[in-house]
Every structure is written in structure tokens, then in C-alpha cells.
Length: 453
Ligand SMILES: Cc1ncc(COP(=O)(O)O)c(C=O)c1O
Image (spheres, rainbow, N blue to C red):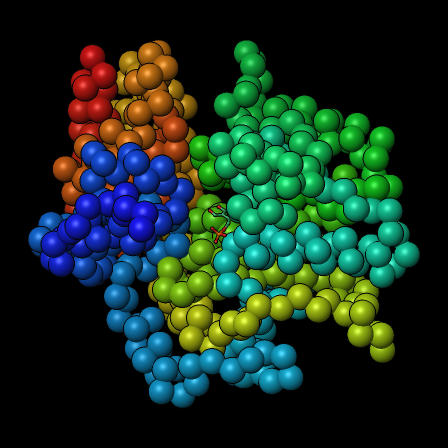
């Protein structure tokens, strides 16, 4: 019999049991031979508590999903009610109130421009759906040659095989290269690329010229361009000027290419407006939502699309329909969590409160701009980031893990992306928590740099 690679563990040792039985996401498991794993016992508000009672401020909203805190009483109450009413029913041949109400309310938030909601369970599935829908729309309309996609340099849209095709992050993609159908990659509008005398709008304009030349050459074969509006989050919180999104909309209209807005991370008020696209005063053809839409409670994703897209599938012929499905499509519990989340936005004037909290956090972080090893301190809505200047490649490679460990010692849950430190906290932090977050982020940064020396 083959020997187990893991030694026997005590029943109360949840970390060791987890490392043996649970294959953790986005993780080289061997790093956990020395990197701590937090055994989360419960959550309350912005805080997670481990089994020993230590607390950690969830400053990245548990991978950007948690908007209104853990164990939020209003979302909890809605879910308990839903649990006693209907936990799940299939959405083919049946319908139910939570799905209908959620679809209608999201459509209303787009001024009924994006009036058709297709449900799935996670972000990558939403991307797959938008890509398939775009291709299939063109196919049904007689443009079967439109089979190619365009993504932005450094973009991240998820890790299924299809989503990796429009993702431009080598670390996640290269191992699967032979399996992937690659998209065209166009220049990044990242505002950090400004040259002397340029503004972020100038970088956006240059990047748009690149899109135009690609469209000039290949628009007849391109189905859609996909973009994460305003902030390319997994790229390291790369922020760009809103004119880039308006410019993409104009180019897509001019050349007959669909525009897919991936608002999985930037939607639900992350950037200061409910949808990031609102800041460019445009709507895409497809808008993908996930993460925060269920308040961080349950897996849910939604692709919103326009009437003309829906109409392209509406036919007597079954095969012309959009036959994509997932077993838990439109799960009533997830939809009800989303409705409770939308209720919180409606009743608590969240956008105004967020603007005030962001100004407070921005002021508290401002001194970091003078730090000799900080570059590009930046903010968009409730997203804050800065790049650590670390010359030694080995120190740079381990920076994120060491920062994570040092942050835990200071009651913060923070996971830098490479050498980019970012904060994406839930919307419920009070002034004391905002001050604590800023002060301890700085302490953690200094402690991590001191180790390097
Ligand atoms: C912009 C964006 N798109 C898609 C995804 C994929 O979502 P999921 O992890 O739910 O598959 C993510 C996840 O971080 C994301 O940030």
C-alpha cells in the first residue's frame, strides 16, 4: 500500500487536518509547511475569529466578496426566512420569486438597458456564459466567422479553460497553454504607464489606438472584447481612466464587436458607483456580476444582457436557444441573499457613506506616499493600493507571503498581489477600524521590509 505523504494528526489540530484533506485554492501547498493557515471559527462584522479566539480584520473582504460584514443580521434574517420557504428548485421549466425579483431589480439598476439575467454560480462561469453568448449571438445572426475575443494586457477573468483564454496572467495560464484558445491581447490603459507630461487619459487614448488597429485588421472575426472597467483587480489593482471604457464602447459600436464588462470584482459599488461602467456613462452588451452581489454569503453569478442579444436566441428551433445550464442556476437562497444585499444599498445610502469612509481611509494612508519604498499610492472607490519597491528579486518573490504573516500578527487579513499591497475592506468599517487598518498596514509593511534587510 502506498504511504500517505502526510503524518497522522491530532483531531483538534484543524490546521494539520486541513493541510492533509483540503486542497486549498491559489496555493502552493508546500508553502504551508511554514506559512500559517488561519483556522476560522466564526465571523462577526468586519472581523474573523480563529479557534483560539484571535481576531483578524478582513481587510480584503474574503477575496472581495463580503460587503456588509460577516453574520450580517439583515442578510441572516432573509436567508433564514428563505430556508423555511424554498431552498432550491430547478430554473428550467420552473421559476421562483427570488430569481424574478433579483433579475428585475438588477435590470432597473441599468435603466432596463440590460434587461435579461442569466444566472450561474461563480465568476468564471459568468465569463464562460458571456463568451459563449456573444459567439452564439453572432452565429445566430449569420456572422459565424466571429469566433475571436480580445482581452486587455494583464487581465484576469477566472480560471476555467475558457476564462483562461481571456486571462493574461502567466502564472495562472502557462501550465495549461496547450489547452487554451488564446484571445488577442491589447495594450493596457494602466494609469501607472503615464510618461512625463502625460495624464491617465493620455494612456487611455494610446491604449484605445491599439484596439482600433486590431479592429481595423480583424473586426470581422472578433465576437467581443472583455474588460474589467476602471480597475484590473487581480492584475495588481491597475487603475485606468474612465474615458478608456467610453472609448471602448465607441470602438465596439463602430466596428460591430460586443463589449463584455466583467464587473465581478468592481461591481456592487466597489469603485464608487454601483456599476463601474456608470462612471463612463455607457452600458456594455454583457455585464458579469458575482462576488459581492450575494453579500459574500453564497456562490452566485449573473450575466446581464440587452434585448437584441436575447432576441438573437428567441426562435422555434431549440438549437438556436442558449442551452447553457448549471444545476444550481438561480438558487433561491443565493438570490435572496442578493436581494437582502440590494435592500441594504437601498436603505442605508451606502454610496454616500462609502465616499466618506474612503476619504477617511485615504487621508490615513496618505503619509505612505512619502515612504521611500512606496510607489503609486492609488485609490478608486473603496479599493486602495500601493506598490512596494523591492530591488532584491528573492525578497520580492517572498514579499506577499511574508506580508501576509506579519499582517496576521497585527490582526489584519491582507494578501498582497506580488509586491502590490491592497486594501478592499467591507463597507461597514467605523472610524476606529479605518484608523486601525491604516496604521497596522503601515506597521506590517515596515516589519516586512525590515526582515528583508
Ligand atoms: C474580475 C474577475 N473576473 C472573474 C473572476 C473569477 O471569479 P470566480 O473566482 O468566482 O470564478 C474573478 C475572481 O477573482 C475576478 O476578479
